Image (cartoon, rainbow, N blue to C red):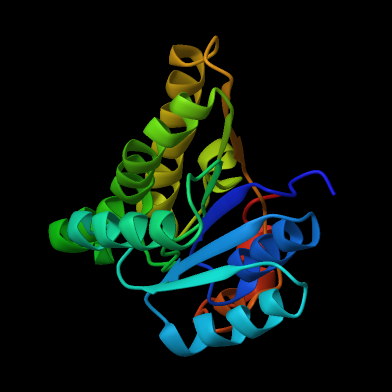
Length: 207
């Protein structure tokens, strides 16, 4: 298996894309540290990862909080060792009209969607540079490329993720660490199903 002996961190791993990513890495042999605010969801993911025969570490907390990240990194390194792979998946996607986006809501979304990936990469990149091999994958969004109604703040945050990814990739191109982003469109996850926006109407605005 291509990632046997490697250790990965996946943020937002309690459900949806994050859980699927954690399971895929586990199937490929990686030990996985799963981070999320939703501890009950993390425990479900933990059971699924364990069933694949790899080690798993559960870290429940805010993936955009510097103190939590420091504790989660220390716990992960203590139980698994050096981290080789980081998937920055944790994010909010609130689907709200621009007049409803207050400055406080804007700041909170940027903190989670943009500052979070920066803080996680900053904390884990040293392991990868020491190893001379690493993979950082940031989950962006097609909204950053196409725009769309009810997603001004979200699209802006994910546009920042794309720019952050490109610059970090160039800066470390010769180090053995690659940095990429994946900009998915709509994925039928619990988060999308719980959205107050009618999915069909929202999707039609982005065609």
